Image (cartoon, rainbow, N blue to C red; front, top):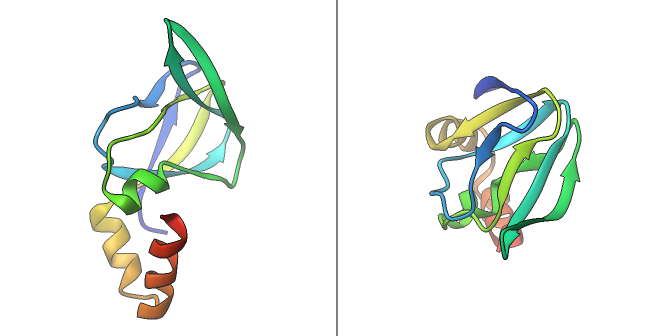
Length: 105
């Protein structure tokens, strides 16, 4: 699989709300928390476990991150950046790529 494996420590941030979408992340192990900050407090939106993907919406839509993400415990993720993703797209039929982008929106 294309991408770069990265290990995050407990409470280490993968990305912050408002950041540019430079890639998406496949959770290989551990637990990830998606949250937003409201009035100085963290509001949890979801927890993600092994086998899930995070950051794909902003990545596909080329928009800023709509939420922050951090590791709840030691977690390994595969980061798939634009270059890796474009390499993978060349192996997928064009109709499927169009469908993925439409579903993401």
